[in-house]
Image (cartoon, rainbow, N blue to C red; front, side, top):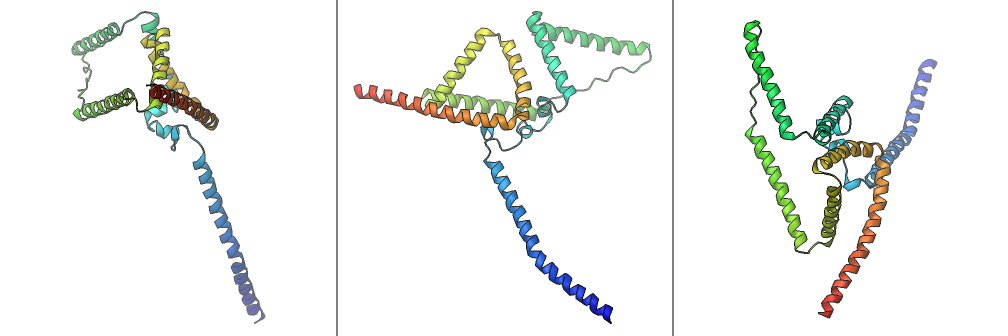
Length: 247
């Protein structure tokens, strides 16, 4: 009987303890939720270059091109870099020409396949299986549609600049064209393409590694540029208004 009373007393004490501790546990869970919400809010407030919200890998497409540019597969990325560098060396340093290279590669490939197909009859070996390559019409139409869209967008930007409605776009276009003219006077077209390729192979990796530092520095730089541009815009507009009043 005494054991039965003791067991009941233990159950009653356990229930009282659970009721007392349950508010604290719920308050702990509420605190965790609040801290998580604060962390998400702080992360959302962090400045990202070009207003980026997704990881860099997803911005680049999250496919094989993104893996190559971000060096996820070092062997493949190194192979592509070595191949492009070899082509640039052939064309730029050895004065090899693109049409000559394509013709020589085609001559070599056709000669090997032709000799292999005829020699297989004499050595009782199976001839090479050459797959039938057919480009789908949808792919060509999609590529043409994307290309047409980009051309139309460029023409629209040129029209906006020519009408004098957007001073910021006008100054950006002038600065970009001036910078390209300087590069064009220093390098030929092929070298410029190779430099762009090297930048695509190095800048994304560097940015992904030092993302927070680059974003913080770019935020400060963009704020300063906006201030300088606002001052310049006021000066230009004031000078234009003075000229109109004189007329």
